[in-house]
Length: 331
Image (cartoon, rainbow, N blue to C red; front, side):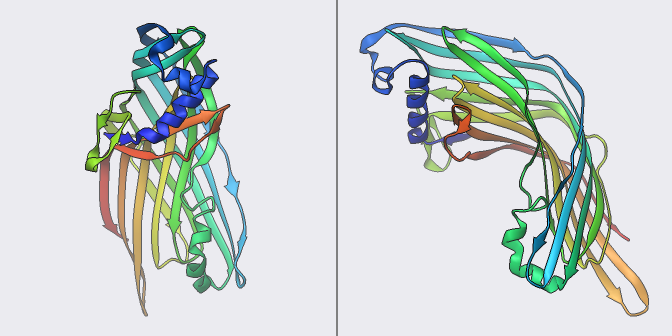
C-alpha cells in the first residue's frame, strides 16, 4: 500500500475543479457550499473475450563500428471477465459547480493474459563496442520500455452526479529487456490467469498514514487470488552468446479517472525472466546453465491528465509480485 504527497494532488484537484466549471479557490472554500453527498458506484463491465493481437516493432542503431537491429513480434491473447468497479464518490455541490471531496473505488475481474514473442537481434561489426552504448540500448524496442499494442479500448463513462463521471478504459502493452553480448534469435511464451483487484482511495482533507514517514491524500492497494502460470513459461534461443539476461511481460492495464482528470492505472503483468550463461572447452560443445522464472506482478501508476494528456510524470507503486514457477537446468 503506497501513498502520494498532497502537493501533487492539490494541483490536480485545482485543475479538475476548473474542468467542472468552478475556480480553484472556490472549490477549496466551504462558504459557497450548498450540498454534499456520498454517491454509490457499481458497474459491471462488458466481457472482453478472445482479444487477439500481433504487431512487430523494429529499429536500427549504429554505434560507429557496430550496427544493431533489434525487433520484437508479440502475439497476444487476452480475456477480462467478471469485471466490476464498486465504491463511493463524495461530491460537494457549490453555487455554480460540483467538485469531488473523496472517493474509494475498487476494480476487480478475471485476468487471462498470454503471449508468444519472437525476439531477434542482429549486429554487424564489433560487439565489444556494445557496452559503451548500453544507455542508448535501453531506449530501444528491447530495452524494457512498454510498447503500445492498444492505447484505449473498452471505454466506459460511469455517471456520478451532474457533470461528474468515473471514466474507465483498458490499455495493452508489452515490454521486453535484454542484456546480451551477441546476435540472438529467441521465442518466449508466457501467461497467467487469476482474479485481480485494485483499490484507489482519495481524500481532499484526510491524510493517509504512509510508509517510511511519508503522508499523502492518495492510497493504492491490490492483490491477486489463485494466480497460476497459463501456459507454463518457455524461453528458447540460439545465438553467439556467453551471457544472457532477459525479461518479457505482457501489460494489460485498467485506467480509472475521476472527473477524467485524477486517477490511476492498474496493471497485472504476467512475466518471465531468464538468466543463461555458457562455458566452453576446446573439445566440447558449449554447456548452458539456465534459470527460468515466471510471475504475476501488480502495479499502480498515478495518472493526472488535462484534456487527455498527462500533467505529471507517473509515479509507480508495487502492489504484489507472485512467483508462479522456477526452473534451473543445464543444456
